[in-house]
Image (tube, rainbow, N blue to C red; front, side, top):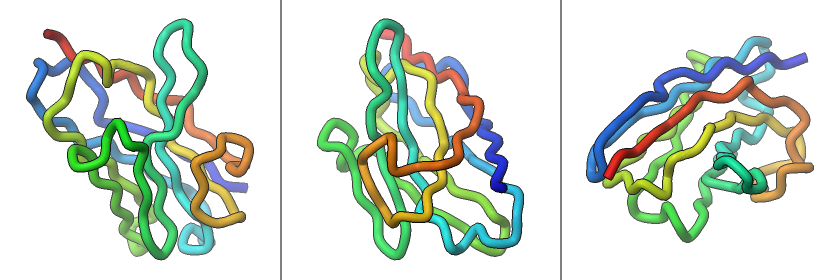
Length: 120
C-alpha cells in the first residue's frame, strides 16, 4: 500500500510560482510512475504531468511546469511557474504501477489534494 501526502499549495498572483511536493510511504516508490492531476470546481479531474523514467505534460502546462522525483526521499515535485488564473484547482498526486500515463484510471493510489489558487 502506498500513501501519498501533498503539500505546497496556496494563493499566488498570476505570473508567480509554487512548488508542490508529494511524499510517499512505502519502500517501492521507485517502482511507481507518479502523476499530478488537477480538478477545478465543476470540472473533471485532468492530467497535468507524469514521470517514470521520463516525463510528460499536458499541453496547457508544457513549458511552465516541471515534474521531478527524488527516489531517495520518496518524493515527487511539481514546479509551477508563470501561473495563470486558469491553473486554479485542487492538485492531486497519484501513483501507478502501469507506467507513465495521462489517464486517471491508470493510477491506483491518490493523495488528498492541495489547493492552488491563482489570482488575477
